[in-house]
Each structure stands twice: as C-alpha cells, then as structure tokens.
Image (cartoon, rainbow, N blue to C red; front, top):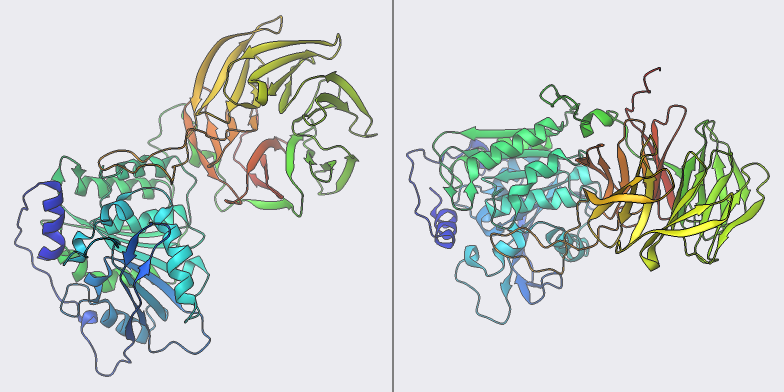
Length: 588
C-alpha cells in the first residue's frame, strides 16, 4: 500500500484507514529495459507563481530519448509529480514512458512532474504531500490551475523544447485530489488538453467536485478521452463516497457520449496499488489511435424531457458564418429563414440568404433587430437614443420612438414593441401605430435580452447583472403581470473569490445573460458568459452550449433556416451557426 499517498489525506480528513489484502504488482512495462533508449529527467528551477501568488512549485521534466531536434513533442502533465518519478514507487513513469515510446504505443512525449505549491514565506514541508496549497490548487473547480499550466509552466517549457499545440497531443494525470485536478484542467480548457488519467479521483465535496456528474449531463460534450480508476475499498466519509463518485462520473460521461473507461476493482483502498499496477495499460488506452464514435442512449429520459442530447446533431459543431467584423450583434431572421445581423462598429446591417449570398441592407449599427408583422425590421440604437424601423429591401430608416436607451427588443403579433433599457433597469412598451411609450416594468438589475414565447403570451427578459431570466404574462392591453424569476442561469466561477474547504466554489453574481431566442417547442436559448443556455418551457435547464470563441463576448442568438433549425450566434468579431435537431411543427 502506498502509505505516502494514503495517510496524509486521512490525517487531513480526520478518518482512519481501512487496510486491504490486495498488493501492488509491478507491471512489466514499468521495468527498465537495457535495450530501450532512456529519456532524461531534468530538475527545473523552482517557479514562483503569479496565478497562485506567493506559492513556489518544485518541478521536473522528462525528455524522451527519441525526440528529434525541432520535433514538436507531445505533452503529459503529472500532479504530485514526485510520486510518479520515484524509481522504487508504484508508477515509475520515466521507465514506462521509455518502454511505450520505444514500441510506438505512445508518441514521443515530454512529461512534466509538478508538486503542489508551498508558501514561499514559510519553510517547505518535509513531504510534498503536505504542501500548504495542495487542496486549494487541486480540489477547486474553475480555471485557475489550468491558467497556471498554460501561462506559467508551459511557457517555461517552450523556452527549451518545442511542444505540440495540438490538444489531442496533450494529456494530464493525477491521483486523488490530483485526479480531479487533471479532469478540471481538461474540462475547462479542452482547447489545450484532451486526454485525462484520473486515479482514485476526489470527485466529492472537498471543494465542490461532487457537482461534476450533473454538470457533465447538462453541458455540450467536450472532445475529451477520460480514463478513470477506482476501487470498492476507497474512501467513504463525511466528504463523500469515492467509489460511488467515480461510478457517477463514468455514468455521466458515458451518457453524454464521451470516450471513457473506468477500471473498477474490488478491495483496494485509497492508494496507488491498483492505479500503479495498471498505469502502463492506462497510458496505452489513453494514447491509442482509435477514433471512437459516440454511443448515445436516452431511453431512460423521462417523457417530455427536452434533453440536450436530443437537440444536438451528432458530429455537428459551430461553423463560421462571418468573420473580421467590428462587433456583431442583433441577429434575426425573416419568415423565409434568411439571416440578418448588424456590425455595430462598421456600422451596417447585413442579410445572408439561404444560399449564402451576403447583402448590405443599410448603413446603421443596431443592437436589437427583429421583424414585425408588417415585414419591416425594428431596431435599437442606444447611442442615438431611439428605436427605428428599417425596410429590408430599400434600407430606408424611420424613427419609431426617441428619448429612450434601448438595448434589445421584441415585436408582438400585433406589431407592438417591448424594449429593454438596461441603464434605467426597465422594460418599455412602444406602440408604433400611435407613438405611445410607457414603462411596462422596472427593477430588474440589468434587463438585457428579451424574447416572446411561441404563442406570444409570455415575455422573458434576461438579467445580465444577475442569475435569472424573468418572465411576465403579456396582457391584452400590453401591460405585464405575474413577474417571476423563472429560469436560473448557470453562473461563472469567480477566480478571485474565496475557495473554501467543503463548500461549493465562489460564483460571480452576474450571468451576463444577453440576447435570446425561442423555438416552436417553447425552448429558450439565452446567451451568457458561459455559452448558450437552453431551457425548456417549464424553466428547467436542458443544457449549455459552449461559446465558439471562449475569450469573446457572446451577445445574442437567433434561429434561422427553412425550418428554423439553425442556431446563429454573434460572438465578438465573428458569427457562428450550427444545425440543431428541432423537429418541424406538427401540421394543424
């Protein structure tokens, strides 16, 4: 039993270990072979982190013998790196790498072995297992540890070696808290890491990691390959049940179509006995060249569930529709399915026809843009404090209302308008026929996106400064009633917040809920800081579609195409679309 791994965690949790009879077995591929070229392990200068201020990290790098000059190496990162480097330990990673690389069972890969950070103002602990920042770095959700790797460790590597930027050529590994850390890095940054090896992973409530199975089931699948390992004798204490947690992880990943494998055995405890015994086989599986097609089974879904998996088209992702824009916003479509949008910085409004033809409609920049029943476009111009109509063919612009600060709008079947005025915290009603303008609601912190249900009887307003989408009943005279927070938007984790032990991660207060759209089934599509959040008509979250450009604001969305089956989003300087499985309305 690897007591170096086993006892520190129990001491931290105040539990007693349960011993088991199973023993670690030395895998043949973990034995040094004289005939195999040996890579070298180089100790790196301690790194004083900026992402984790004041924390010093000891680390070493394995460089394969077969690495050719100028060749971009694959990369694998190990948490608790000292344990994997131990030549008499259970992992013996350098020897395993030598043997697998020599046989071509994994690519020539540079391996990084990092120990948790310790407070530079205090003496280092005699054991890296007890470094002061281990739990905070490893157990916390969010992107801080990923940023530490991508902004601090990898740039240091690239000063000496050429590292592949292909995320398929990057893997990350860890055990216990290091195991959930490995998954978190890939989950947050699949653009940089797509292979995960997690042994006895702590997917429990140490710092909110027990949320992962439900997050996975409600998030668009990410292109990850995940190897999990756990045993029936693993921990069961006040923070959770490790075996059940890993079974839940496998079930969630399998349900969502991930390339996942769980090695689950009987009896082994919270140690590296089983993980070390199968380590070479896990690496072979992780680095195998086989391409796996998702296998989806939603037969267990409840009747009436509008499951995210049944909305997505297998193999279809975001594709670029327009790029090189100043700032894209105001997407909408006409009855034929043609797509319209505004480049606010140019400024201009454009139409993209079903055949891809792009036409400039007018030279105005607008934020909200919708068609009315009269065939005119209605648009918001906050900087000019007005709402205008635009003829979609001739481009003629006419003022509908002035003295307002509109952000977004909808048009009812009767031709009336509701606009959001974010700065004044109000929703305003406009009757273009009579010129009447009056406040329909006041008090939402940041009213932003706005949409109507398919029957026009419900008005939904996203709150960019809060966590809810608010809904109202639309009365026959245009007034709004029955106001309530109907949909709860998933919030971004706050990297500057306090990550407490045995507590959920800190979340930002603002969802940045923005533009919205609805389909004929009554689903709501809400753009936000995390992506497009999709809700069913009852207000339940179906799931979240990741932003095409993670670093750019996602401002709005619309459904276009012949049957309204294509979702378009405005994402900074680009516009993207993707096909969805929105079945056509039933014939009346």
